Length: 466
Image (cartoon, rainbow, N blue to C red; front, side, top):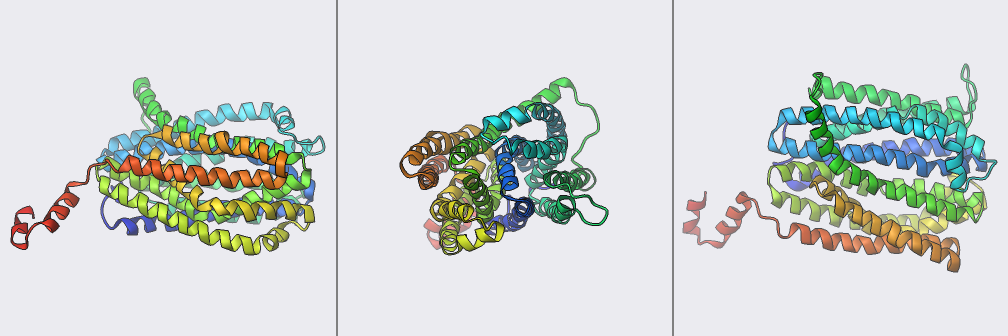
């Protein structure tokens, strides 16, 4: 365990963090797209059923990501300070907390499948398929949550390669297992939508073993001594101080997707399927901003802990600029090719129509959305989760949902998707301005102060500053 991100060129360090993360995010999305593609071959109803599960799965994943965010934030800052023993204690306690929360959520989830999805607007014909999928998913939820927290601890140390390799293994295993278990082949029975859930659980199981093994045998960050209740409570408090607001922030997005899915359900199963399909393609388009937002956290956390504030400022400015440039490129590419991409997954004209509208309007705001994601991640890394939650609340609850409802009344599906574009743009501008005000008062590190003063002095007077 070393504070590896507090030295060296900022741009080089961000690139070194982000490139493996791009691959890791791509692996996660390949995981999701594989499910979508193979389930779409079963029929539009099956695709609509899996689209209804997306908000709920995202909510539970958001809880896991909140725990991971809390762990990464406190661990990265302690690494920056050089407190190895605290890093070990926090890593171990974060995993213990994740096991506890998984048990509670799995039981609650299994008890509420039918009433919950009926309330989300799922038609009676879809409910048995949803029940088949989610029953298996809940039973294997431990394989999602615990590795996610473990990988967050690994990333906090500045190592983004290992988590990316772990997720690549999971994605490859899922891509192989999906057709075998969904359609049946050789000794494998055709399990349909249940097969998709089983493939997900089995492929995730390997990530649990891999992440825990790396933390224990390579990084030596797991402790097997029982902490006192006071020590455990202190660790959990620090983790939850960041993790609860971060989880709440992450929860806002799938909750809003659930509301929007309900609005889309008024236009039929094809509209819901198109919306779900477009959302998954959108996730691929946002790979780079997602990777940047995931990478900025460890960098900001370590440098903040080491009091190297000038590096924090530089990293945020570079990240914002890159997100805006990437957003512009993706907007043009999707405007030119969205219909062809959608048709590869589903040939239903109504599905293609609704998904094409989404992928024409919403990408206009992808650059601004990247700024929001990066600013939120940086705020959590600084130990300031409330501003990050405020950005998400403003974007989704205060703007997107009300505007989507109004837009649906005035312009139908187009109005719903236009609301997403407007809300992303407005909060992206606000996030840029807020983050600029946050970092501008930060003190400049001593080394940079000397450099700036040295540049102002006459040549013969500079030796005294060296």
